[in-house]
Image (tube, rainbow over the protein chains, first blue to last red):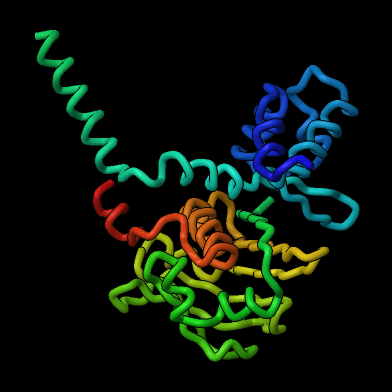
Length: 109
Length: 157
């Protein structure tokens, strides 16, 4: 059985699918036609990619009349984020970043 | 499209009744909403407020529709940020559906306004709250315990 997490990583492991997510991040509630614009791949391929994204719960859809609208659902990505990064205090990560920056700036002077 | 909207879906291994309790019980809400909590009698037409951990009102409005364990619609206006408040009322809809042993929760937050700052703001918060809610119902523990407060983030920016 494929776990939910496997589905998310498999869905993300494709440039076209990541591009579809980028489009939905810019504009939510896009139709299939709108999503097909700007892709060299066929409408059938876009439909298949969207099905994979929907199966992984990275895309949520809603019917508005006869149109199916697509929305980016970031919850599975948030779960990945909290698993590996959220545990550490982000403040501390930022402090390290600042320290690195300060040391590098000093070095260049 | 003169509308701004976010739709989030999460699948939770629980029952619709337990999820409804989790959405409507202040003490439970505090655990996954980073210390913030809602107050309402949760009946259609009743008032609704979301308060920060310190009690200051974050958002307020009323319950437009309430079907226990199925659907909750909140008329939602921001109270703490003048820019968000000026946008007026938004709608927040919780839909609960049961599918083979798992419950699908869909949260739709929308406002009749293009490029809404409020929707952009809540859009960043909902995934954190909903991931925490899922984790709390399934494992008894939240993912992120730290109290997040969107007020401090804005003033620091």
